[in-house]
Length: 612
Image 1 (cartoon, one colour):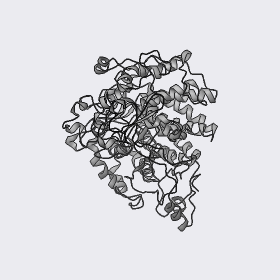
Image 2 (spheres, one colour; image 1 turned 30 degrees about the vertical axis):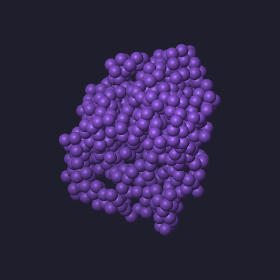
Image 3 (cartoon, one colour; image 1 turned 120 degrees about the vertical axis):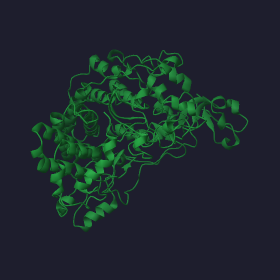
Image 4 (cartoon, helix red, strand yellow; image 1 turned 90 degrees about the horizontal axis):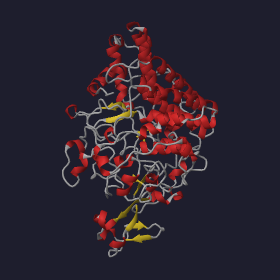
């Protein structure tokens, strides 16, 4: 469902009537201005205000040079990725400030979420307030309930993100007056209290939002898919962190319910994987539930495709550990696969031995533009790669890209559904996962069609996952069941360089994956013949820098005269581990200035546990 880009410029004008499009939350007009009576006249007015939330929550590929919440350029901090030199660190001390009152406040890469900011909570509460106190007489009951569901959806969305970053946060279910200091400076509410309120908001959404509100509009299916994301996150976070079993079960059951509804919609896995991310027009793509459209004529473009075009640098690239997680196309792990060359980690062999998502994600040969030589081209078309070594057209160069961005696609609620069901079955007495469940989820995804280029290369669909013959992965964590391991593997293959990996390992309580001292494969790239495949590295500047690792672990360093021996696993240049970190990094601290601001007004803001 396309975003209404043509309305973006008019949305701020509409917001001026209500919240002055202010950069500062406290710099706003009174709550009851007469102009409100002239704005909330009908559904058209309300729809215009609702669209002001779209680009904040349905970011897609952002716009121009924007990187917040974007693949490739935004989500660069996870165990899937390795850069040259020292890996980027977790923060190790409380920041001087972590607050903002701006609606345009940037997110935080290390937490994959927003800073300490309640501007969008306030905006959602204004939406709810105006619906109740101004618009309701102008609307039929079902219309009122639909728009109230839209407003409560966005409030729940924002609080879900805030809780994923900070845990406990102050909860507001109404617009707070400027002089209500006891409310404005209230301490943090327990995350369970907050997420129970979010749960109630989302239940209202499922009961009242329209299943179809017309072309290009948020609807119940789309909302349900996002709800499954947030309920899965919170349910599994509480479960794996041992925080609240009762709430964990409640949220996970809702994740199953909402995901199942999203899956019942008019969507199907009848699109090839590549076309989901690099198409000029996603209208009509049967798998894409919500997307963002870009239009150069309207000045709405992005740059994400450019950073997948084969030339632009990727400072972090997929590491060998991530690539080893790709299942072979016979449905087995590489250590025991019957596929020829399954144990080869050259890119050419990986493309035809692994799940088709590998070939659609990584370019067909090693490219030095990627720190690891695994160059991600998931978000660029095949045609875009033909311009390597020559000038790029606007569609694949600079910040003038116009490819549509998938915001929500069927694979997500499907994988949320099967994971939530499995967690409930293994830990809460839920019904056992059946082969029919696997067929409706993981196997439905694996049965996507292949495009003609992939077929011509010899790429094959991956065999179905069978409960009676689950892979025996020697790398599986001892505390994860074989079925859960395969569900997690599927997410890793499906969502590479998208939103989920850091959030996934946080909710699974697996942040130790970010300690690269535990797995040397995180410092390696593909098996490569440097002289034949990356001759640009055979030069004087790489003497004593360029290294490969043989199968037996022997390291060969380029000395200027041993080019023929530079065959092995590419060792990412000078790559080394990040600083030590502890469990405190699961959540973000609040800034010292925010705590002092509370103190100066006679109130207390509690610091995040572990950061005191």
